[in-house]
Length: 524
Image 1 (cartoon, rainbow, N blue to C red):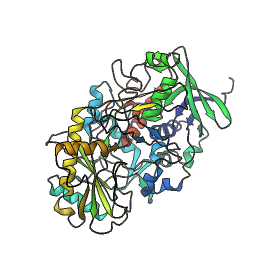
Image 2: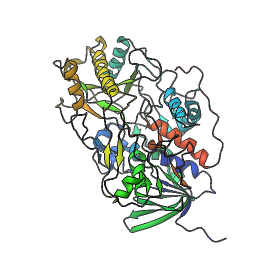
Image 3: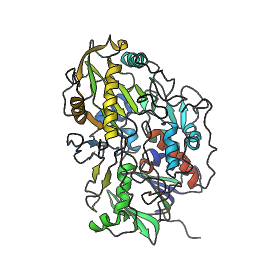
Image 4: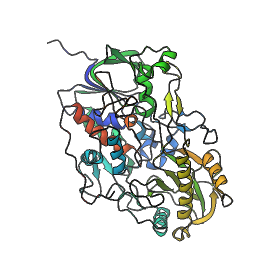
């Protein structure tokens, strides 16, 4: 039998972010499989990556791809920065480290859209498998997985007052957002270990994993396009500092995220046929859903208060509590979210007090109805894509956003925060009418960094992948990352992607998925 070429792999994974790192680690557990992991960025050498409090400084740095949206017509025609990590570990090297699974109803909606096998019960064993929760093992938590999850043992005093203000406003506290009850004041679960950020690469691509003889990490390797032959994906073309390379595989998994994954598919001839033809790209398969269904969570910068006294630094990552709240008393997945940040947070439209003199109640909504798209501006990979999240296009989103502002002000004005609360800086006490508040929101909106849905899983002509993560009509090609999520989860999406990648690795190995279950005591 002839030797296997060095450039051939059983599985070739593109992207070392959340899904890619998990897939590489799990697939290479089988020594019979030759696994390759391709990453455009390099090692996480910037010391700020390890500092949980330094994450805002990484946006716009050398480890950020530096994406930007087109002007948003419902957000004062502003252009939004969309940071994405260009480093081993992807965006987990620059995010705020919150680990929130989402609400069971989120995943029920996936199943309703044809994503069989991806309900909350299906993913629950993989949430547990992925984590070591410092609170200990239970029916809701694991204690032997790669991800190290903590809860703040010494919350910031403003965080403590903020959670008390939520209870005072009428919302029963939650013991754990990832436990039986998602709604209510609660400290965050954070991917921090020994006082340092734990990226997905720190967790899954450990030195021992990278030392496996059947796993090859190719860093600083930018994939230009996939190689497609007669309905099958057989390899990829990439660029390195030493020139162009060709890699071949039995199966390729695209895991570059909700922005880069659809762009790679479209550059390779997989996407809306008319748009690709206009760019001179030969059509391999007409997949009209590629690049569509783009949506994201919005937050606001913000409901800012000048503090009565100096604000001490956070011992964690400046944002120690998310508060998920029902809108109009509805049951099921909470529609509103507040976040306490022990720092001033404002967009480029406003001037905030200096750091150490203010705190912010950020606010947003969890179930956006607005949908946008990502489109190629050119067949050239060096040309940035056209990103249009179409923020606040739907009246529901605008109304929810208004309710979230009112909720933030109610919590911010509660007695529990009186010892810290000075004057309201933003929106400012003069902003009282509905029209004035809506104008403020257009200027205060910014991304919660959760772009989703651009290669969605499910049924119908717009679905790009099936429930096995396989790209429709193309053999040997899968996508597994935020792009396949059909509708966004209630909270940050990273935890769900970890569990998705864990389960996908079992499917790719031909292994029966872990038995589904719902923990006893789970509330709807």
